Image (cartoon, rainbow, N blue to C red; front, top):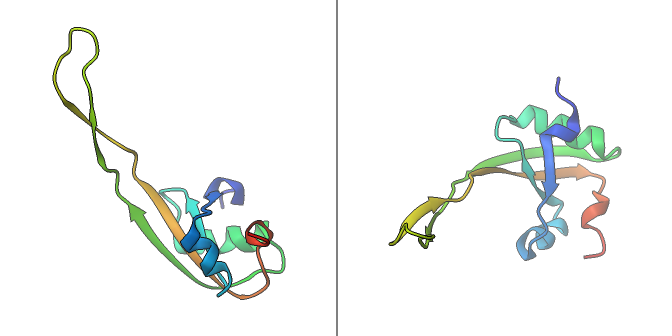
Length: 102
């Protein structure tokens, strides 16, 4: 089993995710190779007292971005942002202290 700190990358603190904290739903960016079982075990290991009810995961695809030319390279070029994985965790009981007080 991987260490829990390598599964959960960071909490996502957006308006929508903070509003979901009132309903017991918390949002994290997770490793692209992590599955729902690993995410559940990581949350319960890092935040003692938090009992996970459900884990929903989704992949946020990278977007195309227009990049201007540099030096002799003239014209429009396109790049792509990095794809990442998001997990929405619903708790039965307990709280995650990062989201409290926001």
